Every structure is written in structure tokens, then in C-alpha cells.
Amino acid sequence: MTRQVQDAYIVAATRTPIGKAPKGMFRNTRPDDLLVAAIRNVLSQVPNLDPKAIEDAIIGCAMPEAEQGLNVARIAVLLAGLPNTTGGVTINRFCSSGLNAVAMAADRIRVGEADVMIAGGTESMSMVPMTGNKPAFNVRIFEKDENVGIAYGMGITAEKVAAQWKVTREMQDQFAFESHQKAIAAQKAGQFADEMTTIDVVEKFPNLANHELDVKTRRVELDEGPRADTSVEALGKLRPVFAAKGSVTAGNSSQTSDGAGALIVVSERALKQFNLTPLARFVSFAVKGVPPEIMGIGPKYAIPAALASAGLSADDMGWIELNEAFAAQAVAVINDLGLDRSKVNPMGGAIALGHPLGATGAIRSATLVHALHRHNLKYGMVTMCVGTGMGAAGIFERV
Image (cartoon, rainbow, N blue to C red):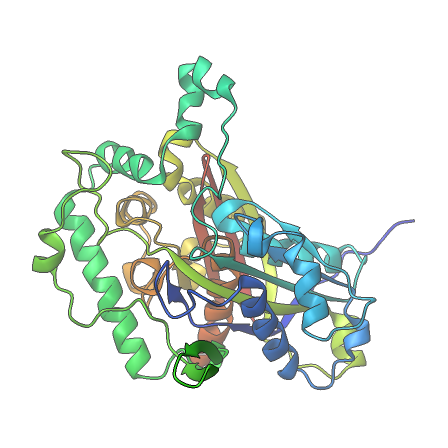
């Protein structure tokens, strides 16, 4: 049977605020509950859509174990109240997992295997640490020099990118400062409102006086990471944390974080059937591999590939969400590709906003599709480096 290739459209997109890990506002909030909140919110944006039409949910998670294990996608689908007929699958491509989820959902639509899909991501770095609770590298990694980079910590790869692409400490700290400044300005202007799912954090404390539980509820509406009080001078005083004589610090690296995002992807047939208004068309996606020890440079190769697949140029992009895993790699990619800095992370990036690993791609996709409409821009891109040496990029078109 030959299937006709068709377009895939995003009709709703949302994300939770991003909390700081491990002691931030979502430290006691499960990642599946964050995802449930995002799914419920994104469904509320399309009241005409029959939930029974949703065939599957593809959810990214970089460390799918413990509280975010056991196929968190399917669990969240059921806890969100979707019918049993809606499937769920959890995928992992580390930092691009959420973006990969969107691309895979779009692929199912484009080849005619589905008409309505949920795509998203979730990650709690408060509950599941970087590399998971029991990292166990294959010992063969260490038998050959060319494989040792697989086991490098992400900070060491950033140091190697900084050295090879000549990104100075001053350049990194300036970039980090600007990320915070842009994020604070966007928060004050209310620019995140359209994409945000408000979370009510419920906490219970034992009351020893009356032997009962005191219940406190906090409403969370903004990302926790942006700092209005930071400065280039303050950032310059931080010590390197990955190499004794290095330049990568906690201040010019992304924040460990908790958060979730969700999008609804549909076919043109579903648009007409349920009278839905599209936000964006998913245009193209690309993944490229690079040496693991310089994983941060991955977007340098993924971006041109995604652009070529779409028949577009970097100049066509009105908005670029380049995940700031580290200032060193973000600056290297921007400089090497000659990207227009005014188009890159106009509302700040992961250094200020946070980087909940497998959720980030979905979160930044939600940011992008709403920004394209708010600023009347035609095309935008989400891109990031990926652990073990990859880069990923996805292109969206406002419709």
C-alpha cells in the first residue's frame, strides 16, 4: 500500500515553567505529573478535538528511569484522562528527545499512519540525576582513544569546544549575562504567557501540635532560573568547575532543571474534521553526528542539513531557539555558521531559563511556535547539541 505524503501541523503547544534542580520549586513534583499538566493544558487549547482521535503520544525523556521510567508517556496519557485507545511511547536522544518526539509525531502524520498525535517531553533532574541513578559505561569505551569521549562529562566537552573554537572566558560570561537579561525582560513583558501552563504545587507538612497534615499550595507561573541580579563582573568571579585552568563555569553553563512540554500534531484531514486552526507546519528535521568529545558543536552540522532539506537558508529563519547547553558551544556554533545574533534566543536560553534535558526540545518548540505568531515571522528553528556527539535541528513554518 502506497501512502501519500502529507503535511503535519502543530495546533496547540504549551510547556510548564522550568524549575531549578535539585532544590527548586518542583523538587517534590513528579515528572509524570508535570507532563500530565502539560497534556491537559494543550488539550484545553483545542476543545473541538475529540480525544478519541488521538492515536499516540511520543514523549522524550533523557533519563527514563525511576519516577520518569516505566514508559512515562503511556502513564501520563492515562493520568491525564485520555481514553485507553491512546498509546504512549517514551523515546531518548538525550537533549534532543523532546524535539525528536515532535519530528517523529510529524513523520507518522506525513506518511499517513496517523492523523492526531501528542508530542512532548518531561524531565526531573531533581529526582533523576544526570546520567541516571546507576551509570554503567561499557568498558570497551576505554579500550580505544577514539571512544573515550563517549564517557566525557558534558563540561569537559564544552572546554574542548572552547579551546578548539577559541571561545574565551570573557565571551562566555558576556553571552551568559545577555541570556539572563533577555529572559528577565521577556518575563517582565509577559512574553511567556501564551506558551505557559500554570502549575499549582501542593506540599504537605506534618503538624506536630495537632498531629495533622498542613497543606500549602503555591501557584507557579514563571521560570525560576533567570537572575536580574547577575552581572558580567559576578560571572567573572566564578571558578571553572570542569578543568582547573578552564573557562567553563556554573554561571556560563545551562542550569539543571525540571519541566515538561507538550504539542498536538495533526494532519490536514484532522484540521478540517475538527475545525482546528494551525499554529505552524513542521517543515524538516535533521540529526548529524560529531566526535563525542566535541558534542557541543553538533548544531553546526545539523542546522545546514535541516535547512537544505527544507530548501531554505539561515537568513530565512526569523527566530532561532539554539539550546544553550554551554555558552562555549553556543558561541562557537553562532560564530562558525554566521548566525544573526539578534535572531538567536531573543527571550534568553538555557543558561537563564534552564535545561530539563529530554523536555527541552518540546519546551523550546512551544516557545518558537508562539513567538512566530506574536512577531509575525514566517520560519523558525529549534536546535541543540546532543550527548555522545550529535546535533539536531527542526524547522517550523508559521501558518
